Length: 342
Image 1 (tube, rainbow, N blue to C red):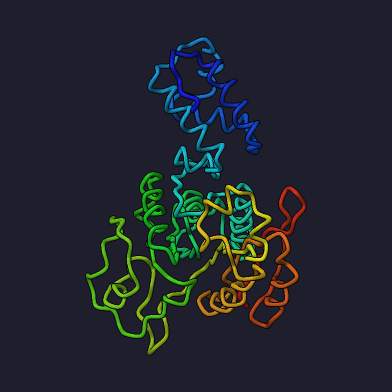
Image 2 (tube, rainbow, N blue to C red):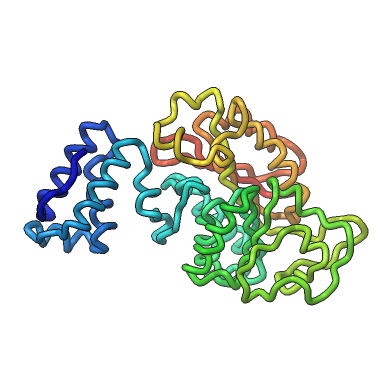
């Protein structure tokens, strides 16, 4: 075992970490070695490179060495540090949630662009704060999309949905960290299907908007979400109606599992990765449910897998949808599909 027996400098530790990760064929090995040392020391990159000869305590050097070994064995850097940057914000990540990817930021860009265009067409003045908007993030995971939109639209209410209760706990903590938990509700739901509420609401059961408790759908049957802009149900119809539905759904095919990087295949949650054998099986239900829950002229924005477009595009070729658009990511891959509810 490569144990640390004497004090070492920043430079020595970094060089050793880079060499070990390079030998293990870890992607972006230099960046990973740097991030792990910064995490251990609680410092920034400027300090690290301006203090190359600074001696590191044996405890910190051992900790760093242990993290390097774990990264070389395939654990993602983000799981070792417990964080990932997204949309200029730092998010807690755990093995219970998908690690936010840069390409998912296109979902936020497209949603904001479509909302701004809709406001301009309606003759409303800018800038647009999202006042009164209700936005559902389906498969919220770490909450990165919902929280980024909450920061960009300080007047909007965000509904964060996920089938995983553990993921919702991570999203809740991230919402608290970024000061938007007073405008978010969290629901454990399989896509949107568990939001159907068939009985009238009784008042004063749902936690006050200032709380951050996860709200299970059973509680909502007796709650009062009117303070979040949700009307009383009419008959057996759901009271939930949204101005925007966004989602980064599971879209990797199980038949592709062997081609995934080890970090992804062995350490990220399968429920957030796989969308069926081919990968695009969830889109049909998600689009059909979104048509039900979106208000007229409501906006749907979905992230696509690298080969999902041919299967997904025909699903929006229906009278329920108009203004369909596709946005490529920086690699030229069709990444975001958007449409407006007729």
